[in-house]
Picture 1 (cartoon, helix red, strand yellow):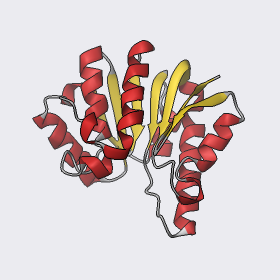
Picture 2 (cartoon, rainbow, N blue to C red; picture 1 turned 60 degrees about the vertical axis):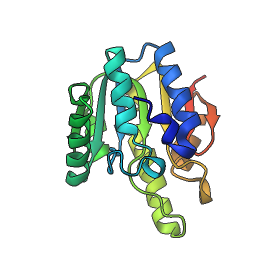
Picture 3 (tube, one colour; picture 1 turned 180 degrees about the vertical axis):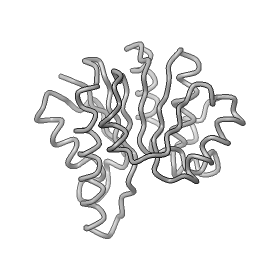
Picture 4 (cartoon, one colour; picture 1 turned 120 degrees about the vertical axis):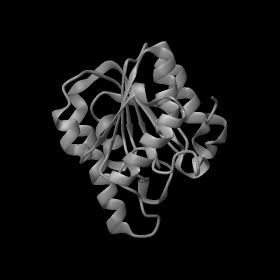
Length: 188
């Protein structure tokens, strides 16, 4: 199923990511912030869990999707079940930073898309940026040399979700491969 064509502003980066995952033979995919609306809001939410689960199913990979919202996990589980993709996803209802700090497998792909970003409230923007930096720092040592990192909501006021995490990454051997609404980073 081709859900990417309906993802609007995320279409280019999602397409690029799937090509990179194939080229790099990715096996372990991790996303923070699961697909909260199933397929009902694909253009706005992106339906990332479904897109990456579908790729994982076709390529012998596993997706770990972490969300602190129990209802989001249930919605994602129901949607994955309907699409017959549930066997390729581990849905985890937990705090993403706590989970990532205990994750002990190598990661080939990391998608940071948890704590929502408010377009107007600078306090909430800063909280989201700090959260995404903490997520990256919690899992940084598990990322393989060929790992790809995707951060959502990049092209937003005050630097979007990626501002602090990407700033840190660029100072620690990572480079931007592509940026639109989302940003893709790889090791230099």
